[in-house]
Image 1 (cartoon, rainbow over the protein chains, first blue to last red):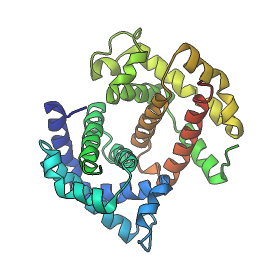
Image 2: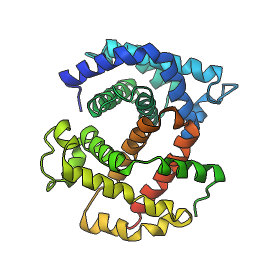
Image 3: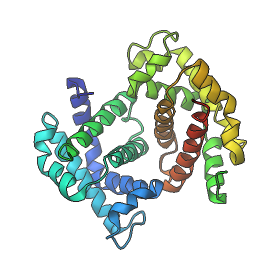
Image 4: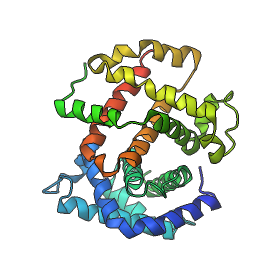
Length: 143
Length: 147
């Protein structure tokens, strides 16, 4: 399910708009991830506060969205461009890849809420494919 | 039996009262067919599914989207026994329609995205949690009669 030229163009165009509210998207998506899928909290037992809107949650959301912006900039070579992040996830974080799908879903939900006009079915398709491609790149070094 | 808190029941009922079936049904099914195109395998007799515009303007898909969405009503009205509520529909999807149950999850995800778009910030994380739980119980019930 590789990204076509059209997918890449769609992702870049939509992300140019969405990333302006990147912090908000990140905070909301992380909050929903932890609240709606509480099993994901197991990765954050070192945080003092896992509640929606807390500082660690907002901060982490920012980091994740930053990573996604990097991915958009490296959309033509995700494996190469995300190498460092890939090694981080493989050898240190070791997040089970199922969770990438769950986080992707929550980002899509937040995008639908925040950009109801722009988040058309075509944009939904390309963004979903993009997140899947990023997840694949992040889990590339797992084994 | 699945336990529902009062807050969960309230949240789920709220979503359904705000639901415009005639619009959300068609959009959810259309998005499923567009975002997960392999799901089109079950819609061979539904006419033109050639591209997103064709799918979104296809009257047969729209009608079916409404039908499927109303299928959730029976769970809403039988929240304390969703498992058995879907026995016949589960058999239908398994024996007659031969639908891979994974597809139920894909459609459920699209439904959440569409409802989020309609309700906006009213679709709080708590509401999302309750509704996602509701849909996962329905999806599980629909897969029960497969063998």
